[in-house]
Length: 133
Image (cartoon, rainbow, N blue to C red; front, side, top):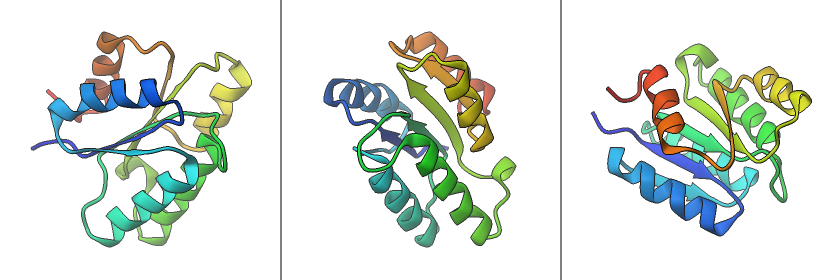
């Protein structure tokens, strides 16, 4: 079954690279900030076609990735979905700060990769999450 992915990234080149890479595994949408991400997730959930994976940058304009993850997890809870059964969220960022990592996991992300993202590491995380074989 193809994977449905949302890439959330404010930097154009990173966004296009991630989208092009992940599109080979299924439908891949993009959002340029946390607000767009939360709205795209809400619409997908309401349409009974939720995302399988969200690749989320941390530092973005309007709403940070951590804030967006918190909002997404609240939407899932409201819909009766536990975070362990919900969308898999992979934080992808240039921030290599232990406080940011802890904050991301506190917001219930599933994994964390530091940019520049190595395709092998990305695939390894997605496989570990059980989204691809």
